Image (cartoon, rainbow, N blue to C red; front, side, top):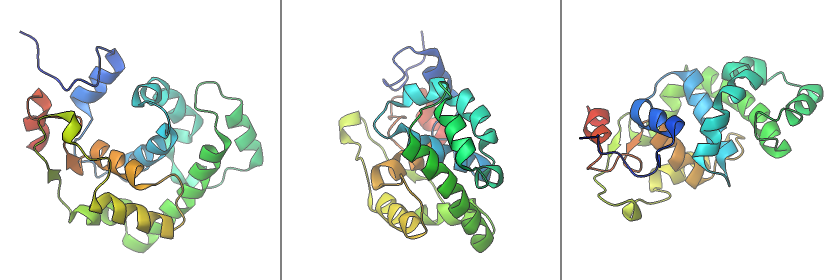
Length: 191
């Protein structure tokens, strides 16, 4: 008998691999946290499947999400990225990534790590919800509202409360949306 999964992977290999191995695992690596912030920003208006298909291309195009390198991108690099069919070619999102890299580095300087800063919005722990149906899941919470407001105050772009909530789910700050209580990963991620 097969494993019971959340319904969203829809049998797609990349989505299943991501669901089974990464989604919702508490993340404390600054570079990976930055990757998720960037990818969630690029996802705005698109499906997560679309982003996952292009994820390796994003890694190559954006120097493996090295915020130091990205913060130095110039107009020539922006134009090069706009020609890269392997990524989402949205000028506003590309420029936001560069700006966000600079803001990310500022937060690292101020707090010692982005991890220390970002996890303060959940008091350093994973919020464990027990949704049984995807219709119960909110698109934002007071925590994602606070995160969005503070990130925007610090100069970040493409960090609305819905994007922040998606980021919180991806980074394991919230265990709910993609691991419903009957999903085999719900208990594993909870551990």
